[in-house]
Image 1 (tube, rainbow, N blue to C red):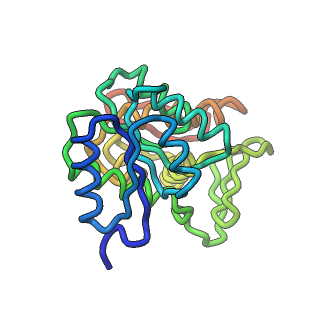
Image 2 (image 1 turned 135 degrees about the vertical axis):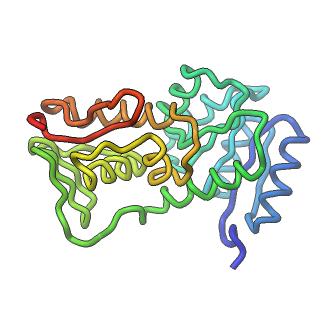
Length: 233
């Protein structure tokens, strides 16, 4: 089976050369590809074609990619979004992820990297990232039901995105063990050499949602990675 068979992507960029290169490469991999050059065209295409993923340039002629994501999320559209951007400051990256984007790629990019990121995001947003084996993962008063995908801390339900869930699950499975940044990127995002800004952002999301309900469980090992452990550990 060809890699992208049955998957539809939307490429949004106002530079025709970039759209052409991306669309041609992705079609070669078996994806169906729609194209848009403005934010308005992107929103209309998502409504009309319901793509499985959007590759979205940040700088667009009408309004920027951040506003596109704001409008998509406000409308209830949960389509995965990967930003294409020449703006690689930490502030821009975190801002995009905060809005609900799933990943970002900085320009200039390699086509192999784009294909790998697309595969990784599609895998982790398919809803099959967990293992429905009926087991209950615990650390202190934090619980994760791997069958119902429900997470609770001190009895409170914690709402997590699919990526947050996968990251927390990997930390729980390895509770008490320091995981390197590379290990987390490889397991959760399917690439071991990605920019750690994405990982740092999602760790901060988990801390905001999980550690705000009790003593901190997620700890940083400076220069190495992260560990989930009991407060007494």
